[in-house]
Length: 252
Length: 219
Image (cartoon, rainbow over all chains, first blue to last red; front, side, top):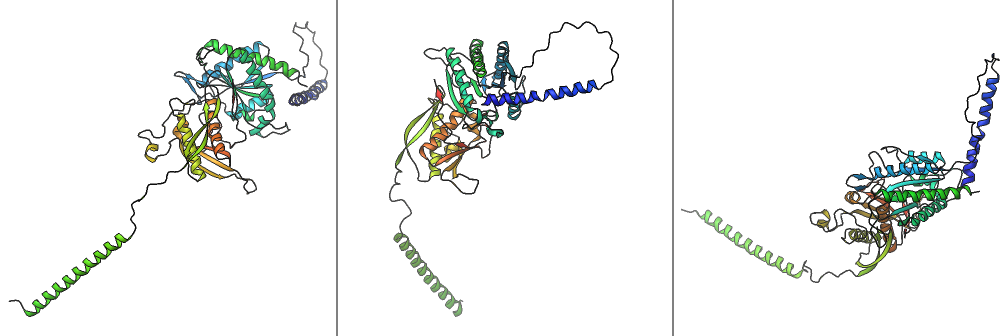
């Protein structure tokens, strides 16, 4: 349902293009005829790609905090805002390498604020939105979806509860990431929470909170700064989004 | 030579003084009799201990992101507001235990030199009060809204993260609803004011419904 709605909106946007193009063509035809200079041979440029009306699979990455909002203090010299930005940038590269389009809410040490973050995500009409967080508490990866009660998708959604129409998809996306992390033998916990700007996002949304790996019977204590640990998490998330893209294409 | 008039005046005044002394002595004896006859202000029997009531505390666990029920027995007053406060004070005190599965820094109740030790109140909680759930039409449904006012020191010392903050809020909501089912909504303040988040993550600007909160799933 959500996908057909998104596709319809895209098609409507594209349907506005032909009249504009026709208008430009008409104005050019109205010009008086000019003597044509000898035409040089056309340069060898690739032909323009065919019009693609299918909606593009986009992922929004929201690196939490930034600027004066430092977030949690992970270690003496490691702040949450820095590690979330680092993870988001690396994940963007990995997703791009898999042919997945990415929109980020911030690329530098700035704090756009929850409203701007939600606006950026909603304008992208993304197929998945990931809010990236980090904490020094707990173990493994914590996946959170909104605590809002599910509601049917409607033409106008209240800003504060826009996410309520995407709860089933958000839970499926969370399950997809959970499976991929479990395959990588990374402990995962699932939960529901109220978190800004999650409730204002009009896309399947999961907050991915990365924590150090606690030592256990099958796991070795690993700090959050361990690049191998980070790589394993990002690989799993990339695989999950790859799988999510396949599911997304099969939507009616 | 003392005149006769002076002698008469002297003896008259002496007589008046003796009579006044006698009256004062009698009044004093009368007051003493009344004092002995009245019931004394000193307690004659010890205070009756409040009966303990079984309560359920919802204890969070950071390791597996879970909430578990813990049964305790506490002497609780009759008033719901006072009961809610004691329940939350007991819950938050458990977070300061060295073996707590959900450790929270800051001053614990009863520590020397804190305001809480002087007043007997937990410094993590400024206030707890109950009010009828407000309705748009002006009428009230059956449930109550609990307003929990955390202290600024509790918020500042709370671990930052989605998981620890969410667990704290769920534990508070769950403990209130488990013991006082009439509480269907909970709102949070910090130092008497609305704050965006508890420690940077969990949203404190909204009203939490007890029906919306559920224990997270760990694996």
